[in-house]
Amino acid sequence: MTRLLDRDAVRTAFAAREAPGRALAGDAEAVAAACHAMAMRFHRGGRLLAFGNGGAATDAAHLAVEFVHPVIVGKRALPAISLTNNAPAVSGYSGTDAYAAQLRLFGRPEDIALGVSSSGRCANVDAGLCAAADAGLLTVALVGRADGAGPDIVANPAVAHVLTAHAEDPRVVKEVHVTIYHVLWELVHVFLEHPGLLDEAS
Amino acid sequence: MTGVEALYPFLYADHADLAPVLRAASDSTADKAREIVGLRTEMGEQYADVLIECAQAMAERFAAGGRLFTFGNGGSSSDAQAVAQLFLDPGGSARPLPALSLTNDVAVLTALSNDIGFEVVFARQLAAHTGPGDIALGLSTSGGSANVLAGFERAHRDGLLTVGFAGYSGGRMAEADTIEHLFVVPSASVHRIQEAQTTTYNVLWELTQLALG
Image (cartoon, rainbow over the protein chains, first blue to last red):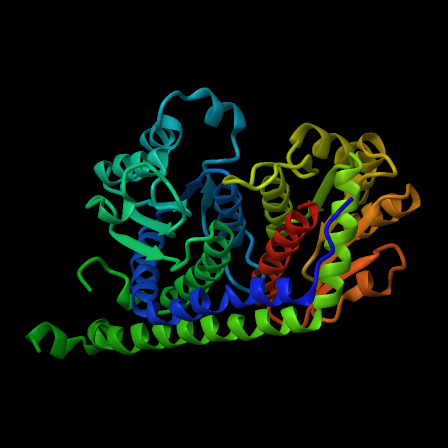
């Protein structure tokens, strides 16, 4: 036997999305700054390396396909790889090394390391961002305020750009993250149309 | 302005232009944020009854031992994986439920694509894995993906509960009589469609958990 649902349950669920969705508009400047920094890296020949755990692993995959095969016809393909696709590698590494080891091996100084964590407290995502920063990569983190017990990525000085979804429900965090990375993709292309803005000195 | 800048102003023109481009980028971000908030609200109002019926039907299937199979292409394949992962390992006190994304297995996907064709990659897997008590959930932003439509055809014929997510005006998915519960995001932006689909399947999961008590 299952419980009967009513419309209040639907209303409550959708209402919970409103404030976190609106809060993103308040972070628009931080998003724009991250896009500019990412575009500078692509301009230098860098690649996007994305990673995250569980549901966030699917965001990393979505990010990679977004950049490699744009949905908008005429936009050029940009190099992006999800570090979560290789199940043998991800499951084979021990401790918090799943992404850090791949970044140390694959990462080049001009690349971008983008970690996704709905709690902002995933130890292996944090370790990946630290390894990336050590190797000279640009570091970007998409985080949220879901429960988590690991190191605080927001407080990690190795992370250059932290973009936060202002929600505690990991599902709602993910929804805001999807909008953020769609905007990241779109605005990276806007900045790439202004090559004069993309030299490191600018 | 230095002497060199005065000689070659076109080389330096863009430096002064960074601020307006950053401002335009920032405005564009805020616009997108507002747009998706509105679209989500619209989905909640338009699909409240479909969500309730669908969650109720899914909960009944799960309660009777049914499993969830998900599929889609590109960004929608990562959504298919996200839906499966959400049901399988929701965390907290939520009830884990059996779910599998049909986009995970590269050996199967490449074998079927190479030997038969890409349009059968989901239908063949559904035929191999599922029974009439199961649930098939497919996503396509256009509503026109041939392999997703073929998956629904197979699932419907075999008695599975079928749940679809599309965008625009639903495309061929809206015309198909193989999808019992269909959610169409009324937008012309692939990005906003995917974002609203994410919210809709997350709410569907929430309601399914509620229905299971």
